[in-house]
Image (cartoon, rainbow, N blue to C red; front, top):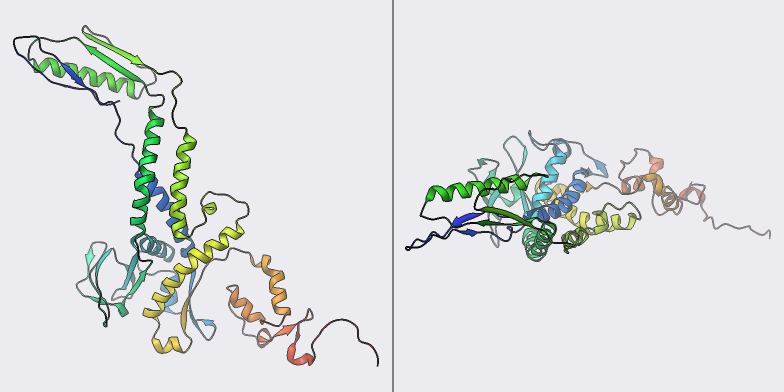
Length: 387
């Protein structure tokens, strides 16, 4: 119920009429939390997944643990941990469509809050007016000097705004109707007063304001009556309006649209705990892996020399696995027994370091795990007949 205002004082050799301007409708319900919830839920899930990844510098199938490894996995700069750093990178990358990471003179990796990008056809793009927190760098940065990651061609914020235009209006209306479903409605009768008396009008307005404040937040409110002032409440019986379930459906619909745009199965956002293997696999394949590829390409371009990259050195990102290694035991056993992969190769595929043991590089087959070059014959099974 809106605040009552007094207006319209007319005096032409007759009694003055005092009219009340009553706002019959509340302001539109705040709908911004619908957008914030979708963004925080979807982007939060992706950023938490990426922040659990391990960034490895690989050379000859071995991980090189140098200064680059330290900065990417533990402390990119003096003020951020690696997990928080990559969460911020992913959040900015997805929502703003791009993210710029520069390296300070001390070697720290810093995320730019704002910048200007000048694009060229045959020369390197140049980044100007790079600002990190409150500090603006006076120098310009070439593309080869920074880690610049692009997400897609369209900003997610633009897509969300377009979806929010429809869903937000519907959500706001449903919330308003739900709040007014059992709302107390009242009228105030005030007898006409004579004369153009500003003091009387102010007193009446203050009395109305106190009455509104008394009934707004209290379960039981006593309203004193005075001469010329009558307060009446009107309550509708069996008020009909949208239920809370309908509001939740609109929220889930908006969330589903944003999740689909990011490649996230909606079942992962609902908190279900049954049959998550397939949705999790789809999430890793269609959402996380493409994003990881963009980040790794940008890191390799800037942090690994061309000659080193062509000689086998590269940076790779190991995302968290969604299966326990013990769940893969039977499959690993079959892969080794078939002779298609050796044990070191499979250790590398499941995310573990290779073992410096020549026997681990041997290819074996059959359930006896015999070396292929030692058997001389294939084990086909079955009995042989004597000639």
